[in-house]
Structures are given as structure tokens and as C-alpha cells.
Image 1 (cartoon, rainbow, N blue to C red):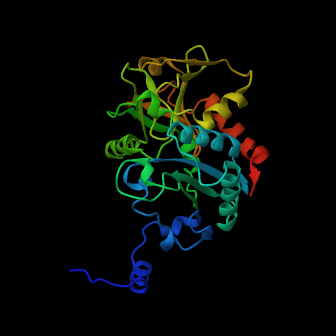
Image 2: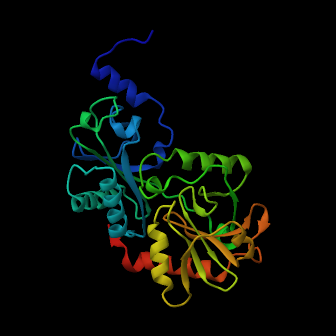
Image 3: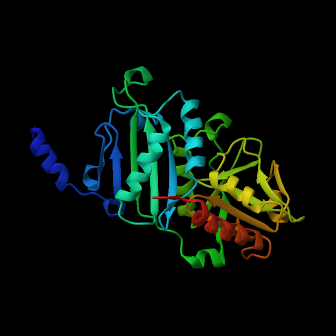
Length: 313
């Protein structure tokens, strides 16, 4: 039987326990304490926070590169919409959450990384009723950024149709903590030896990847964005559309799987990789089987945009 100990002995054992992934944690903030920490062994969330055992919370992931935090306003506007959709507010104003996020990035001691902002229902019980939780939780974590090597952008990546269906319409539009379908998509991709999964809704229309939006360039050279009915409205996607300007016709339309075989390019757009060409889908080449000019153009413009518009940390 495990021994029963006091707080001091428990904390000593906690500090000595293995901490896989701790080397990637740069800094973190926990609103109950009002402090920024840097020891990954103390990065903890109460188990009775409904965030943990009910998935009752929302999050955003932002990237900072060369001391610039990208798309701050877009990420926090989306987070506010997600929180409102589940009747949740942070324990402090959103502009304060943004300032704290910048402070955590600075505390990480590096000019390039990722930062995760999480708002949960808060601790208070193991039931399902949000009324158990008197105060929402806020946790902000800066961690190391491990980008794909440059060679991946030069050769492109593979994708396949996952067996996991797209989320229901109203859930797909909320960036909630409940990412179980996304996790299962990622697991299936790993088992199949593929780079990225692509899911479809119950009507057979293309929805999204596990954590990215999927777009095409069709045979007419138009930039096709699958209708965002069963997909999250990506901050990178929407910024890419803005940066394309009048260079190419942009069309939001329902997309069936057959359109991929007829298209010139297929790509993923997301915070981590910006824009990355998919050159093989379900084992068959997309277009000429090489990264195309539109995906390259988007990648270049997003990289430049980070430097030009990112908020200094």
C-alpha cells in the first residue's frame, strides 16, 4: 500500500518524479497563483478542474518567431468566440490574458517558440454541472517550437482520408479542449505511415485535417477553401486569403474528394507550419507530385508577415 504523507513529503516526491517532455517547457503562468514559473515539474492543473475530466474549456496556440508573437488579435478574438459559445469567461479581461501571454513568452528566455493559452471551467468537483466551479482557470505555457525541416517544404508531404468523421457543425467551430477525434486522426496517420489525415463530413464534403485547414488549387487555377461548416476557421487560413489579395481568385465552396485528383495543388495551413504542400493523397500524386507555386507563395508571404506584423515580446 502507498504511504500516507504530509505536504512536504508529497512535494519532495513530486519533484523527484519523472517528467517526460519537461525539457520543452520554457515558462508558464497559473492564475490561481498569479505567478510565472519555469520548473516543468510544477506545471500542474487541479484534477477536479472540469477542464481535465470533462474537456470543459477552450484554448489557442500561438507562435513567436525572432521575438514576434504572430496574429495575437486574431487568436484572442477566436478564443473569445469559443469561450462565449460554451458560456465561459476567463478569470480576468481578455486584454489582460494577452498581456500575460506576452509576459510568459518573455520569461521563456528564447525568441522563438510556441505558447498555449487555456481557459477552463475551473476546479470545484468531479460532476458535470459547471455550477460546481466558482472561478474559471487560466493557464499559459510557452514551450519549444520544433518546426519541420526545410526539406519537408521542398519535397512536400503525404495525406490520406481518415476513417474518423468530421466533428458536428457546432462543435467544429469551437476550439475546445476536447480534441479526441483529432487525436484519433493523428494516431491513424502514424499507424499508416502518412504525414497528415484529412476528414470529411457526413455529406462527403472535405472538412479539415487534425489541426490544420486543407485547401486546393483547382484545374482553373483558383484557390479553393472548403466551406467551413464542419471545420475550424483557421487564423492562418484567413490571413493567407488576405495576403493573396487579388493575385488569385479565392472561392469558398463545398469540396468532394474527387476534386483533389482534378486539382493542381493541395496544401495544409496552420500555425505551426504556415503553409505546406501535400504532394501525394491516398497514395496518388496531387498535380505533378511536387510543391506548387501557390503554396510556396503563401508560405513566403506568411513568413514575411510574421516579421512585419508580429507583436514584439
